[in-house]
Length: 332
Image (tube, rainbow, N blue to C red):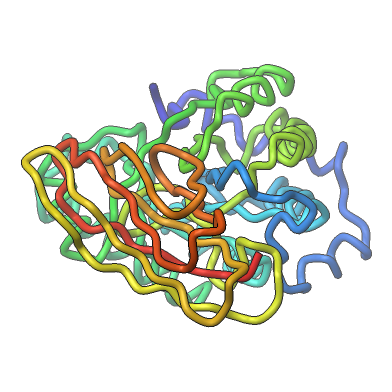
């Protein structure tokens, strides 16, 4: 898997010009960019959340169309701009932010970082952190290495800057001249908690996006953001995953612990009609549950009442990760 090889990226000016000609945005679409984000309001989200990710932006020819398409579908995404592009397109960085998109770090100018020294890696990531802070007013917490190339040194550098490294589960192959229909087909493989690699600049990606969003909605999957603690797709901040109004809270405590698994006890207060999202750590999976109806086995689980009250629990296989999952609650 590769993340936008240089030979493809070099044609961006041509691609951008073609998209501008074919997909010009009118005043109505521009106004759309300034509305607050609404995350997949039409879908039930009962199948969970996935992260649509777009690397290498922002780009003058495609970014506004990308944002407009997401906004019109009530969807969100995670973008991974380079520091260089962020600096050169400050207004589009603001458009990312205003649309409620999660903004990650994708290095300064998309090099092969593993050919660099640790100090050079540090410069690539820290300069990008500063550029995104200056142009969008946010500090990224997730980092995608160019080309998906990584090692322990790079992960250590990212961690020192407060960044969680994330790769992807599904590669759209849009960097490799995949057609719009092929990109849409690739998105059909997404499941709860997973991330899909796409890019900000290919015309085929922009063309495929409306169909991708329709297909996700039909499968009751919602678009989410990437958790900096687990690296998996979760409900965006401020989203009510249950779709109701009001609020509830959930407390999480560690239960019995064995070599390969452990119990987690959860207690909900504030309502008896709730939906709890439980974010499992990387590698972890659900073994069993009690006193609630739980969907999903990895990534983000969804728990709902089954008539047994507001106290329930799960048993989690560690699979090398001993961290206690986190949880959020909303009314269903």
